[in-house]
Image (cartoon, rainbow, N blue to C red; front, side, top):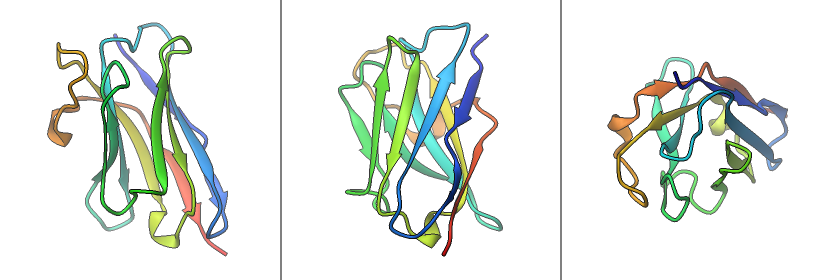
Length: 126
């Protein structure tokens, strides 16, 4: 059974950077598209970025375009979210999630992701 573990969160000043990791230990991520989501206190969860199983296709929320980069290293069974130029409004719990679309190169819609990690806190504050 696929289990996802996020890491890399923490406290950073505005303008700083963090890299989040989403790893799986016992099951290969190869056939899975991966999405990053976030939820701030009192707000609904929102999609941040997603990547196809082969890494060739990516999508970003408008609020993070040009600042965040999603990537994956299937040899390490890990997906990354590089976050640069962080803003206080990026503060949230960040979750990764997986979906097996059955087709390589396809990025599933946000609502299709159905296997979730526990989340990692990102706080952007001076």
